[in-house]
Image 1 (tube, rainbow, N blue to C red):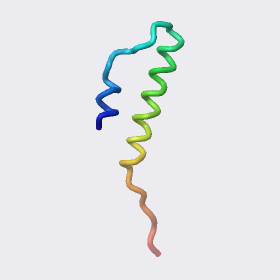
Image 2 (image 1 turned 120 degrees about the horizontal axis):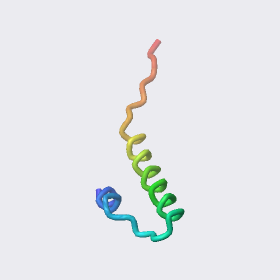
Image 3 (image 1 turned 180 degrees about the vertical axis):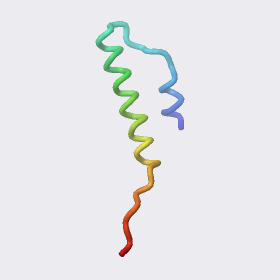
Length: 45
């Protein structure tokens, strides 16, 4: 959970391109957490 708290902090990079990259990294981390929470269902024959 500590990592999620860090995602809410302000952008650290000053350069715009680096800010974009920083936001993309945060999105990738959140997508990873979301993927862990999605149940995998299998059909039972």
